Structure formats: C-alpha cells, structure tokens
Image 1: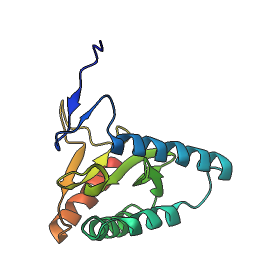
Image 2: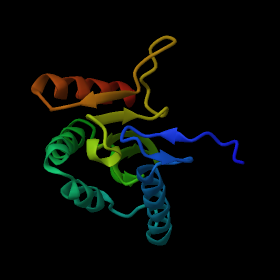
Image 3: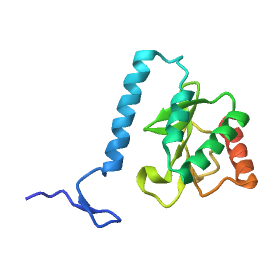
Image 4: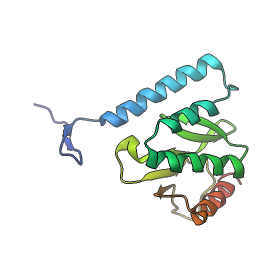
Length: 152
C-alpha cells in the first residue's frame, strides 16, 4: 500500500509526482546542459531561442517574438538562452528572466518570470512573475522598467 498521495490534474487525470509537462521540461534542461558543456559558455545561443519561439503556437509566439525584441532593445547586456526549454535571458551567466508560454504547461496565460538574481526586491514581498495576454505599449513600458530595475 502506497502512502504517497495521488494528485488530480485539471483534466481529472491521476499522477504521482511530476506531470508529463514538468518531466519534459526537465529533459529539455538536461539536454541544454549537455549542449552547453559541449560547445562552451561563449557560444551564440540566440538562434536556439528564436527556433524555440518559432515552434510555439501562434498566441504564444506573437508575445514571445515581441518580448524578445523588447528585451534585446532595452537590455542589450542580457544573453538569450534556453532554460528548461523556455526562452530566457541571462546577465553574466545568471538567469534574470524567462518567458513561459501558456502552451508549455497548458496554462491560461503566458508568464514573464524573474529569478532571484533579478534586483526586483521591494520590501518584504514583491512579484517575481507576471501574466501576459498581450504586449501593449503600456505593458512593454512596464517590462522595460522591470528590466532596468532587475539589472540595477
């Protein structure tokens, strides 16, 4: 008799531990680490990020393409790379932010997330991820401000 609790997903499926999407993300991360070790830290990884964005469903791809352009223009010191199969951006080897497509984990919306290396600290509590449904000029301005703060 197993004492491990079973978890029910949104679709009513039972599983123990990680979801299929989570296991896929971990496999992608292992592959990224192997590839990075083979080619060295100085390799250009932007083409891999753009290829991953191109594979996304249209609703995620439109946001990811624009987000990539905003990040490249407003934070040129960030290096695009893949992180758990997601487009991410690092500064001096430390992950600062990443884009999680809605389709990646069958979520309602895409997410722009920041790591603890991002300097977003604001008192005792602050947001570390943001839901994205579209990139309006106002949203882009907020992202640019967050990136400037994250890198300060």
